[in-house]
Image (cartoon, rainbow, N blue to C red; front, side, top):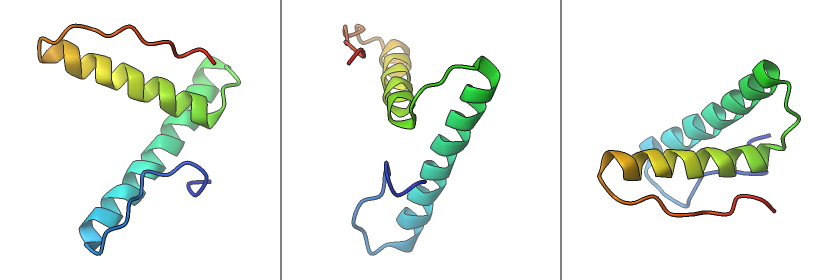
Length: 74
């Protein structure tokens, strides 16, 4: 499941590879939990894109940067 949408990048450093694997598994687990708790039938790609936009907005807010308007509908 992690092969389809992955965060991996080419690196010879094994700690980075472990980190990317953990990040992929965390995304899959979060998607499964989201689907079970909300009952929403959302694709994994759509969920990951929404998650990235929300995390970026929280980061911008925490650092005093203005929110960008993003269109997440496709």
